[in-house]
Image 1: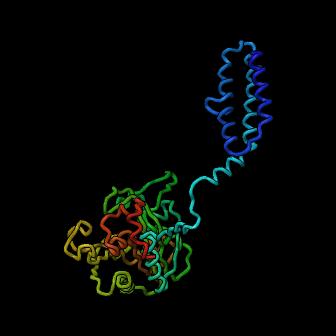
Image 2 (image 1 turned 90 degrees about the horizontal axis):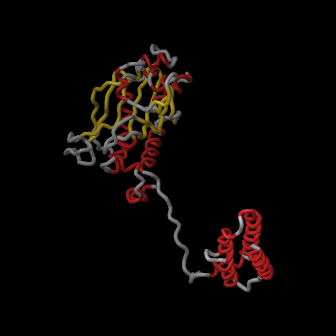
Length: 342
């Protein structure tokens, strides 16, 4: 062990006297003392030759020596950085690499256009939380506990007693606005919603909605139809084929679904329109008196209409996209197609 201690003392003197002339000298120092086959590692390998009762003492000496060698190397680290900056055959006369601009997602493009259309009709935007309670998502909308229509909106519950869940529709934001009691009401509520559905070309476990609500005195179904006719003509063009079909929704009465001619197949039939030539784009109807009463609005004095649409469905028709899953896969080959649509 005494011989090893003497060697370490000699190495310390060599380290103290070391002053590199450049990056090459510094690299040679690193290899000699700190490399995988360097002096520090070799000395640690000699630990097995030291008697057990002196291993602790020798270990302290080795650690001090290692720290000295490393600190001396770090003192001249600026030489290493300067050498790295000078390496390579960089041509500084070349033009800089262009900065690629991102694009808006097709869902955002269509969402913004829907908002602009309804803003011109006097609708304002109302938003609400994506994690909702049972009252705002179901009960206030005439969907009491154990109501069979709840099966139409199977969702993801976060907790029970009290029930908290991922909202199935942005109608919950409308309930919150109605509860404020500031009439008349003319709002749209865009946002993300969730439902426990099998993922396919037509459905996903999350999607985006825009719902509308208009409540005032003497609001009629004719007002609803003319509002939606205007929306479709602005979104898809004046010659778009439109039809209304009677339907059922627990929060509206009477209720209807609105279809337009499928743009993907031109009305001849395809998987998106289920070979019918028509695609449903939204549900609508007159607000159920029970919903008005639940939110503190007098159904004898006020009436209103409501509608709701999936933004993905509108986007698929507008841009003739056949698979809804493309919207959430982040494939840049798909997203770059909308670069000119900003």
